[in-house]
Image 1 (cartoon, rainbow, N blue to C red):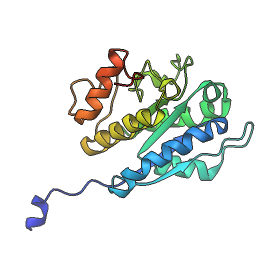
Image 2 (cartoon, rainbow, N blue to C red; image 1 turned 90 degrees about the vertical axis):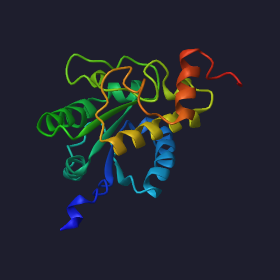
Image 3 (cartoon, rainbow, N blue to C red; image 1 turned 120 degrees about the vertical axis):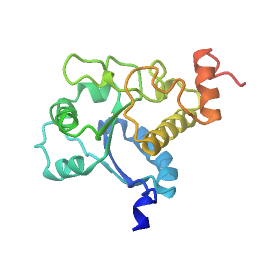
Length: 193
């Protein structure tokens, strides 16, 4: 049948968002920016874990993590201090990644903190929006979220598994994102240029 020669459309991705509840305002901004990916058929749905310190690992959260194609870790001091996240979401994501290389882990840096660890090191994966410039360091945070959503779009379209700080350098990024990255490197991103 000639159908096998047709390029099959990419399966819409399910995203699991791992976060500390103290960062919910920023998570909601991320979700606003995911809406364009959903409208374009790149993302089917997202699931936000509700993290309660000391709560029992929830079967529903486990089910959503198991069904996800991409897990986004919303990294902040609040996130890093939450034992629940380390014990359940990060640990289980690394276990899944070791069995399923197509599963993607994406650190999204909300604010400055030490997030590179010796065990289950999220630092092995390319951080968004930019390793040295967290979301809260941008005067215009929508610019930061735009970088995040466009890099997720590129990752989904190309089935990429970004690893290393400079992964997106030289990739086929949209010109406006390339220009923003160049402004970050030159220290001009928060200037009115």
